[in-house]
Length: 293
Image (cartoon, rainbow, N blue to C red):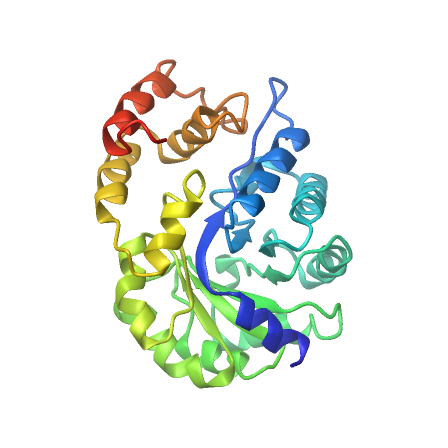
């Protein structure tokens, strides 16, 4: 089995979109991130992903992204399938990052092409043409932003052996299903963004993995869902609460409640989360998880 096929075989199950920890100065707390990644890996989380939104790349500079990629790769040490993520970079910078991600132990990289380039098939194909030969690391596409990622571009790029999948942050229904149907015969997996419930419909069509809203702090539940022990009773009340109380801050507060992060700060220039967020979240989790959080 070649490297790309082996990577695709591992890219199954719940995906933890990695939230980062920041210290009082606004810098990434790499020690806390390493402890968190080690815990996730020990708990059996199958896939860890650095991603623009949850990992707050808009709050990071290029050096931060380089450094946190190394922190994650080294802390995971091959126990989970680790997916790095690019910024919105020109191809030359992305080429450098691919080589770096491979060197520090990442298993694949999600390449994000800036939507302002147009998201047209010629632009996307040309961008990935410019990455050829940069590193021997499997790649994932990113379907997000407007205009939507063209289906014909996904089909063309899916046929390149080293491009093994896509994270879909676009339409969570018909476009998601079309992407799966049109690419599933090319050794290519479309990862569901959004919510666990999306995967319940995408999996029968061929989607291998999904971002999971409880995986950052209860990977055991995320794994149970993948094994079809449906756990909507855990996700729904948490999801609705978190949407009302600042999504990113709520996930970080949950990680803090587990004792894995010392705080739930967002990266600057985000304002500070509400002061009693952790206390409110504990009340909710005591109810949802019946004291087993």
